[in-house]
Image 1 (cartoon, helix red, strand yellow):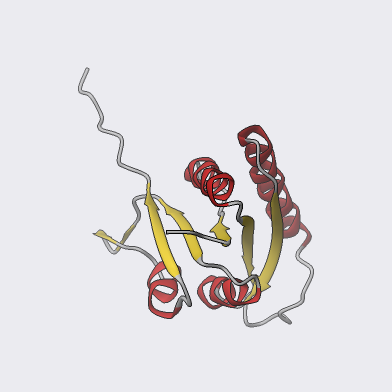
Image 2: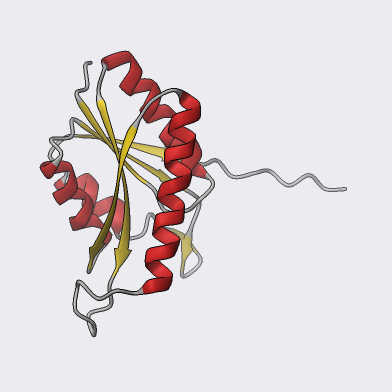
Length: 146
């Protein structure tokens, strides 16, 4: 399958490095444009365009790291800092705007109320994405009894 445009969601998790490298490898093979997006979720009590300096700095730092990973992988990416009420709709809208053929989302093991959970963003993207989606799962590290 050929891809012309790939969108990678980053969150500051360790898995980001692998997802960005993978997207760059796909980009090189397909001569595709790679976009990296970080979403700042804005509380409903604030205007959606509120400047939350700490969150903006964190997002910019995460995007800088993604750009460095891409540079080491030998591919250029376009990084976007997004602000929205929820990450899922923001990522779907970004995929539409950049004409993405593929969305890549990295995730780690999370629980909610003691049960495994994909959270809200991933199910939303899987349900509403205008293109293919790859979910990059960070496996659990087995603890070795000493």
